[in-house]
Length: 298
Image (cartoon, rainbow, N blue to C red; front, side, top):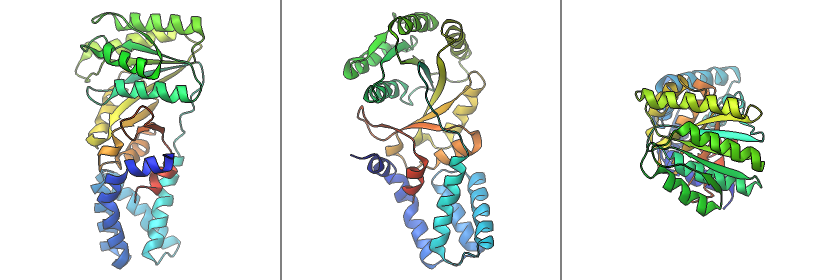
């Protein structure tokens, strides 16, 4: 299945939630205040957020006046152009090697599964990858990651449950340097910002990486569950207080009508969405392409 079709299928629920409404509005709506108010409501319904939806529609209204747009269908085209310009303003992730990618996020968003899929992604791109099971807090976490390592035929570094997570990372770095590994994928325990000890553990992991492998290209990705919509933004705020987030991996995009949250993530935080989950298979993690996203949104 091609990438464009995968993104299209993943956005099916979001598209179904708003496309019919937009098409109905465009089919008989005049470009008046009521038209733009209803368009704002439609954007809010796909979880773009009230403030941002109003901002987008106001920019669209000004463009329509300036460009003397009269046809509703032309407004749809201009809306897509406006969204693409906002996405283009955010610098995308360009992973350089050797790379250490630390995966963070709250419980249940799919961090371990994401790491397994990332290992398949890098394998498909001819990169040697090693998994680091630094989630020593959750029972059976390393076993779950080990299953992914077996599935994708990827090396894994792990310690016993309850071990020092930073020590696991240290061993992973030692192994990566010795074997010339291209990518080190570091799993971490799911945590809320209220779990101060676990948040401090992230800082400790950061210090170990900076000290032991200063030549590596560092990336910290936060995994967000698309089905949580605007709540995902709160998670970014919480983690940004402890670690510097470089990019987003959005999971379960295929299971929600709230795909519009991607727009808020990039617009409000200036953070690129690096990957999106578009299914349950090992190959169902795709690089985010904003053109395909917007074209498939409505």
